[in-house]
Image (tube, rainbow, N blue to C red; front, side, top):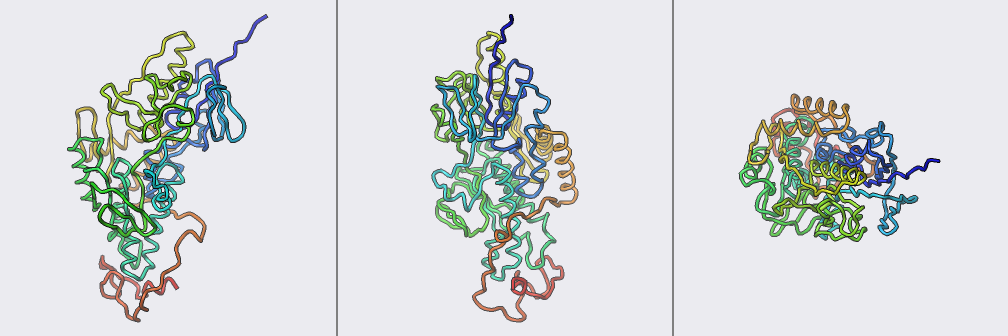
Length: 462
């Protein structure tokens, strides 16, 4: 008579870089895996800003989780939301049912942090999901449409002002892309406005942009941003954000479109397991990425607070998440073979940030460079980390087309009709029959000098 030994059950919450790589690394291990995520797709977050700025479609940077692990025999994928974790019973309570685990890998990432001002989220969306990216794209494109039909110069100026709060890699990339849209992608699309008149402002509370980078690269990045027409404001914190603009320490910017890229907060599940967390809600893990007091629970990716040997924090980037996921998978395999656990050591392979067309900065060890070489390196690395051959091919084709034509092919405004445009505001005084064009040039001419129809914008909104 033979007895069957129950295989350990590994529950992974989160199908991002960390969770997906942990699952794949356990493909040949004698374990059963349950991968749980609230969404059915793996998302390449570093390119979300390109969806938000109409360079890529949502499907270009997302891939179905089931398709990503379809050849893996020891895994089950659940579309579900983890509500809480009972570490005493070793149970994950889901929105429907429960999942009992022997090992738990928590890889739920991080969300936006408004530093206690959560009401700002309504007026300044962050960028962490496809829904966020599509909403920001909708707001950006609608701003130009609203400016096109706005007869009042001051209100039109507010519609054409875009503010990005936070000058980390996401904020820098977002600001550069918004400026390129205005000056290249839509330069001939409108009749009554000149999109190149748009004002793009990047606000940072620190004294320079890209603070994780060296001062040399930070200065170079700011120089490249300003060459693109981005107005950089440093050493200023936001004190208020509403539907018509943003308040800084001693100034106000009238802007109908504000994007938040200033802070992140660990997933709520980090605190739910009763582990110590830092100020950002990230779990302070042991050297092997396990939770203090719960050696069978691991936290990886953006939710884990880790440090280098010199005490500097490990950045919340894709390589760190991938390495963490693979490390935990290796620990589980080794433990099943009776081998001792080893500490996690993050291998920093460098940092890259793109600013715009053929503009980027790179820091790889002591090597620092920018411009075209950094931009090409950025392109190659981001394509390499995309999941799925089709995604890589489509992204390369989209980038090539945009580079040659200066156009962006994903400029779709989505949403219900009542969400699209606000009702037109009547001007304080009815316009004269022969009113000048909105840019102040003689009737029938644009700021760029091409012919315009003689109809005034006030007629278009009636």
